[in-house]
Length: 309
Image 1: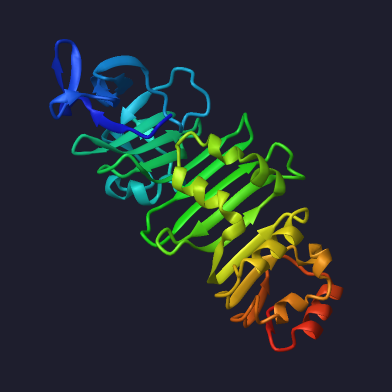
Image 2: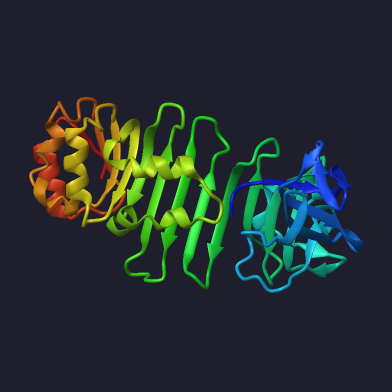
């Protein structure tokens, strides 16, 4: 589903049985108000209603209740603080525990979509930029499919995205990336070989073409001064070789890393003393436990580096 405007019907007008916004036939999502603050959302194309809108927050699409946030309250949190404590409070509607969709609006524009689970707690959510078609952040967990998508683009200097397929808990397929969208420098990256090859993250129900393009350029990354790396043992040697040749590590001063034991092709760790590759490196910090042999070899090979064990 393409990102699109999401508006209350009160912002639109009907002309010849077609919905118009700012004088032109509307394409997007329209939220119609019903009794008791309930909401009926529909997809509209060129002014005509085509089908009910099913939020990406909903794990499975059976008919559920959908309400305006103004009708929701919590015994644990004041209404004006709900956005800060969604995940920690029970939500109620008409004095009963609520399960279903909640939508929040600013001047008729949809700001927030949130799925409340059967226990009355917040689950999947999306925060929208009401002045554009883009998401600000979302967390989408689809239990039946074993898939998770997460995104945070709130800061102008940082974007975070993750995809995980955890149907096989012993070999979770994933990719995580954090980068500066202005400088394109990568601050955090973890991935498995299958995900980089097959690109299943592009199935995210909220399209993020700029993020996909960034991940696809992994061979030519430029890393930030503080870098966190977590790599599949089946790909770590290949990527280190590529990044070394492309001068990707030139700005890295502190390196948080897991999987060093998998660097079979770089068993002597001499790469960390290579100033043409790691000219700025001062510290290595393990994200997971190294073997004793790895620790000792690293200390001997890179005596001038701080090894935070």
